[in-house]
Image (cartoon, each protein chain N blue to C red):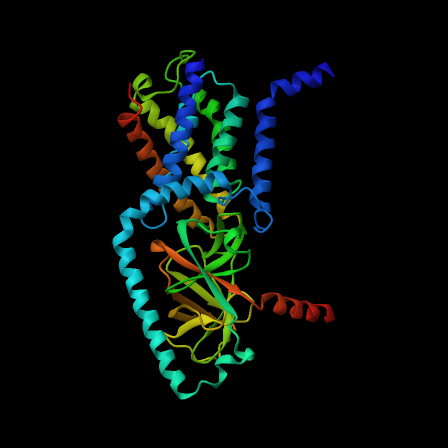
Length: 168
Length: 277
């Protein structure tokens, strides 16, 4: 338990720093920069209580917001993704049940399962985020396109990270 | 009462979700009054410190270009100094006249965080109130106008960049002095739009756009960009003018914050006018 808290604590700090110091400076095509920090929400253990998911999502989003001067935008989108997570897990369960105490990992549940899981949540996160940002700006189609392209980049990065960094 | 508690316990996640979303969206909406958010921005001590440390490492990678830029700027300044000296020989009368007092002073600062890819872009500078920076001061680089200071802490300040649709800058066409307002539309970081230029005005591609000086923030005649394209929409009385921004926001390193010595005087005078209306 203590071990887990420490592990996820480090993951939180590292993901935030990687996001704000590295990835936010890499802008593909001038305007797209993938969001990797949502990985923290994706990788929390299966038996994380729903309220904890939401609170962690809010804190994570808010941290990113404070670094990028966008109060509320990342927070709202990450809370939304955290809210959807239990439902999505239920929807795509490959077996009858997930092993209690374990976490969603590509090594245990396979590439196809993880891709499905990541695509749904990342798409939801990006769509919510770009529409929250657009609020007062841009047409519908433009925002939609931007969100989808950005989700695609995020998915590639997150799936790759599973093979490079998070394998056991 | 027991039923109520059971109901709350059963749907606690939904309630928490709605509560957190309302909180976040309030933040998004409130932030439109960007002056009022005092602490939830990157000029606070922790985030400012992290960015500053990061910049300490990252700056080594751009030292070469930076040197070139500084050398160029030195050369330019030296040449201007020369011209000044030469003109003095002709008439030295106004030099000590208090009417010709210098109004604008510059504080040089380093950019330690910057973005161009969001709908609302902000820049973080490594100087703050300790160095004399206050909200609503203009910020320029050697190429032209960059933005306006919004929040100031002791050692850092945030600047709302031209690449932010919440900022409008009063601008004019240098050639014929017609003025309008310059805004960014959220797309390309090298282009902005100039509105409110009436259709009878003679506009041409390549016309220089400069600040109008109709505010206490920027002096008149600072470079903003050049006209890259213009069109007249059917039925409209105003041109839609696209401007190539002169500042490259992607490689901004050193900027100057403009201190206007007569700002308070101007604002005071303007506020008496408002009272009349």
